[in-house]
Amino acid sequence: MMVRMSAPRLLIISFSPLRSDARILKQIALFKDRYEITTCGYGDAPDGVASHIEIPANLKEWDYDRIAVILRAYRRAYWTNPVIAHLRPRFAGRSFDVVLANDIDTAGLALSLQSVHGVHLDLHEYHPRTKEELLRWRIFVGPFMRWLVRHFATQADSVSTVAGHIADEYRREFGLHASVVTNAAPFSDFEPGAVGNPIRLVHSGAAQHGRFIELTLDAMGMLAGNATLDLYLTQNKGPYYESLRRRVDSMPNVALHAPVPYAELSRTLNDYDVGVYVLPPINFNFAWSLPNKFFDFVQARLGLVIGPSPEMAAIVRAEGIGVVTENFTAEALAAALDALTPEGVADYKRASALAARKLSAEEQVKEWARAIDALVGSRKAT
Image (tube, rainbow, N blue to C red; front, top):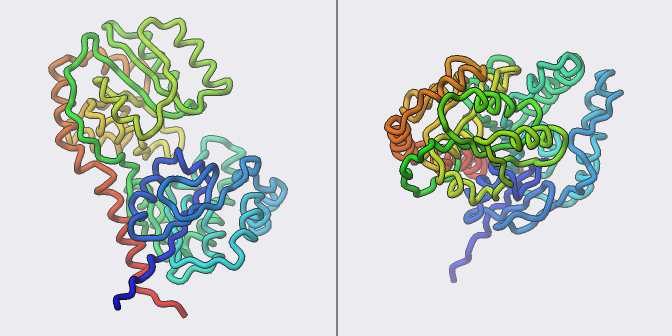
């Protein structure tokens, strides 16, 4: 009689709301048919997992003991974090074949668990310089982030990150050899639609202070032409969002919409012509940004108008999918938008269609599969 082997037990940890975290959902989709997945994060269990450990909403992952951080008592600061202190006893007596941990905050916890084959750490961004534009962050938080990387990330069995230059910086400063898994969106089988008159611009993303959405609104107020802009913003609460809403209410060429579920985003964006995103490089991660929305625009078969961020600009130019502005100002963005023509936008949309498969999540996540499968296949329990 044939005995069916049980699936390896994979734990995916992220201190984020899992059901709306696009990167985590891609990890689950990649492994759910071959692994028995347990997730740990905020909110309800995502679809396709065997079990889930929910982090209570009142516990905040960023709530480190300030005094401990200031005094550089980093070990105490980490292990007394309310989320980590809450989770440690919840994992008591549980073991996993392999752990996929997301972001540096999860690394120490992941390494402390009983894992037969080890830990893959997906670092996402470059944590030691996340908010380096803020003096107090550089003085107090930056050194703590570097400690977390030195003490935990360097112990992981394999690591990945979101962009090539970020991987280079981890290697230069910490000797980490990180593979790259971009924030590519799942492949969508859409055709590029006809270009509208006026040209229909769109921006999707979080309404977070420091994302410079107001720069795009400034540009829309300078246009000589009659393009329109639609905004689909998540985190649509708080003073920053309200300031945007008030501005949009007075702008006849801009409309603000409720966010749509991530699974519906590409289809929603497909109704537009050009995705717009300009992010001034106020810190290291912004300078080397290669965000979800960039790939969302491609899967929606849009042309792109983006600022001269090197990682994004290199792809736009190589694939011929849009325009890179001269600099990061509203004036440069307005000039780029005014220079768009229906014929040129149609060419960009066709180029996005040609590049969509290559730039899809299905191609990018192969690196996670390689890393996790290598751990499970090459290491034995002791």
